[in-house]
Each structure stands twice: as structure tokens, then as C-alpha cells.
Length: 78
Image 1 (tube, rainbow, N blue to C red):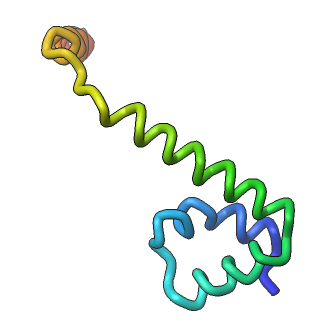
Image 2 (tube, helix red, strand yellow; image 1 turned 120 degrees about the horizontal axis):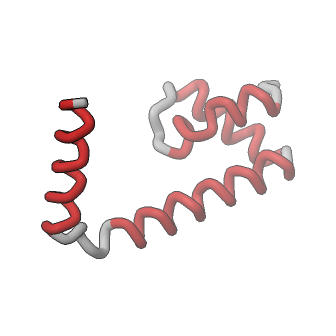
């Protein structure tokens, strides 16, 4: 069976469904048996959902975009 270290290392790819079917199934099996990794997975999924909800509801104001661009331009000149 896949070890906790391997699961945690591949957890973000698992959450984003970027793994092949075999790896995805191995991690699913591990998560069904390991409380530690399952809690970590649940936390990461909840955090990702929270970030997604809070960051896409509003767009940055144009003045902020302009100020950031100006600051980056200034830094490039230095």
C-alpha cells in the first residue's frame, strides 16, 4: 500500500485530478483507511473551496492593477 508520505506529496495533484487512474485509485484507497491523511485531505479541500469562493467573487479594482503594474515597471528600471 502507498505510504502517507507519498500520499501527502501527491495530494494537490489528487485533489485537482491530475494523476493517472492507478495513482488516483491508490490514494483513494489510502484515504479510506488512514484517518491522518483523510483529515489532511479534507482540510486541503475545504481550504481550496474557501479560497476559490473568496477570490473570484470580486475583481481587483483597476487602480490597484495600475499601481501594481507601475511598481513592477519601476523595479524593472532599477
